[in-house]
Length: 136
Image (tube, rainbow, N blue to C red; front, side):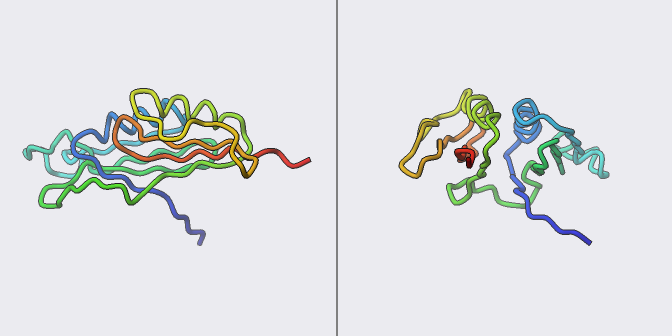
């Protein structure tokens, strides 16, 4: 059986908006299940996201949820999602992820020869994008 490692993000009520935004940037198939879908129809969180999963054609998997009742929500700066490769579509991803967010390092050529940039998107998620120079 194959295994994989992928980011799982938690939000404080904005998981649906965030995942729909990421789908608009990265494409792919998004599945969303609310707390109500899993038997919590009468809870204040009924319409919030218990689990969402975005599977892209590029092979990316991004999962998320709203913070469940009883679990603390402490956003921080200890995690960054990194996109890297030699596909020029990474430039488009960077521009779209930056919309409404804050660019830390503009996407531009760096001393190691690749284009690199980092940003925090409008949902507070940190991203790094490294566009490598194709090898001759």
